Image 1 (cartoon, rainbow, N blue to C red):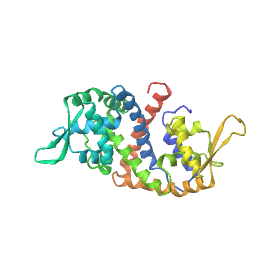
Image 2: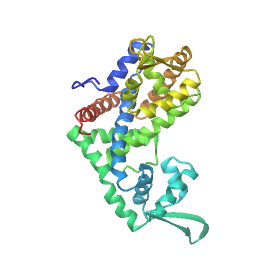
Image 3: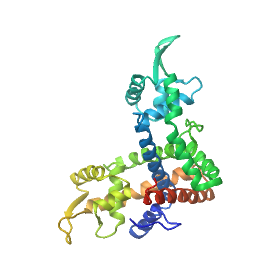
Image 4: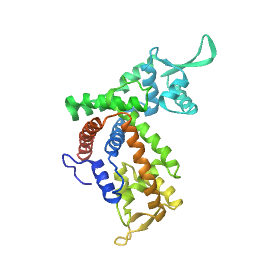
Length: 319
């Protein structure tokens, strides 16, 4: 992996590759959205590791946070589903687990027995205070990387998160939670864009990595996985699906028969050329609806500083 310089991060590398491989598309919106999603991956991984000791998933903890932030520490399943952007079945499963752990309870409304309310228990409230340390640690890490500028990042992310999710409770754990919420919206919108092309967002990320390599549009699986912050198994599942539908192929390396290289097929190249401009346009529309050009420039610079800190920590083993 290339060592980072003080002003170049992974997203700068991606933008440079797009400029070489597809110069007619202005990929600059990714300078913001790509950094938001990548920083969110780092903070999510840190939070996952922290929550694991409490036998909680991030989704379950999100529900506890939502209940804790509500006025009466009580919400309906519909309110929870809407706030977490989940289906009714999905939120029911999460609440079932929290009730089984004694962290939440269900009760009927006294004036309408058909309606159910989910409440935070005393044990659940204690869990929010204890397990929430992982989120607070992420917030402290962001503050360390920016110093007083973290307030500017907070303000700009606040404008962006309000534009994508008007129901978000901004009191929840500050910058890192805003980042996670925006990343969720970006990824959800990307799934909608790429579903029209018969692939998932994750699948397109693999295709895009190969396309950015330029002719003959091939890379080693390890290079692709590293760039996408994926395990080998996680990448393999994506590649299996893409190979089945004829968008990529895996071959033995001509110089090392023990190694495998992954290459885009002509159909894969065509898909990227058609889908990528629509993807970038959706990001540009999101940003222009929430931030003025000078605000976008300021946010881009702040996010670069944060991502450089995370990547430097990863390289030194301090993440």
